[in-house]
Amino acid sequence: MKLILLGAPGAGKGTQATRISEKYSIPHISTGDILRRNIKEGTELGKLAKSYIDKGMLVPDEVVIGLMKERLSEEDCKKGFLLDGFPRTVKQAEALETVTDIDVVLDISVPYGIIVDRIAGRRMCVCGESYHVSMGIGDTCLKCGAKLYQRDDDKPETVKARIDVYDKQTSPLIDFYNAKGILKSVDGNNEPSAVFNEVVKVLNDFN
Ligand code: AP5
Ligand code: MG
Image (cartoon, rainbow, N blue to C red; front, side, top):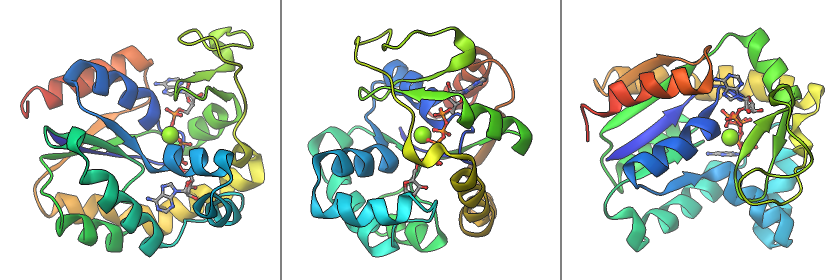
């Protein structure tokens, strides 16, 4: 299954992606995670990405497209994949079409007020797991034991910029994929497990 997860910042893409990837045994490919890993390792790509991510802006299309073309050519993507955070512009979506077909695009929709609260309370782990402070979590990841941290771009002023960028540059992808007849929507304003049940109902038709 070749799947794209769409949704505003904080919609729950990463949270659902972890579960989908486990259930359907497909790699979870998150451009945000790849870029943050590069920032942590201090690579040239990381330095460039940081200058955009810290402002809530998108990293230039050419950079992300190149990165994803390379990633999608790897062996583990042959049986399918789940894209989280890519494509994010129509230009990226058009570039993706030149390297692979896509079975389904899943849009997770959540009202904006909820999104802001979710992002403010998010705590991350290097293993990719994400938590919310309301879950009554401690300082460490329940899955791997590493110390949890808050993302640099989760500050309120950056979150506002990310939501504006989503509205202007990413939300047009809803119409783009709807016109191709492969868009499905799920209500993301429920408990993570309830959202996942909805996701599975949709995906079982494609698997
Ligand atoms: P990226 O890492 O993709 O961030 P994002 O799209 O802003 O989305 P988030 O990761 O913030 O949210 P999410 O939907 O994954 O939510 P999560 O599951 O964590 O991108 C970061 C930056 O990298 C971009 O701004 C850009 O600069 C750059 N970038 C990345 N891709 C790019 C591209 N293709 N082109 C150019 N630039 C790119 O959940 C959020 C919180 O809510 C958590 O605390 C979670 O526990 C909680 N939560 C989740 N689901 C629920 C639920 N159902 N109920 C209650 N709480 C929930
Ligand atoms: Mg994410």
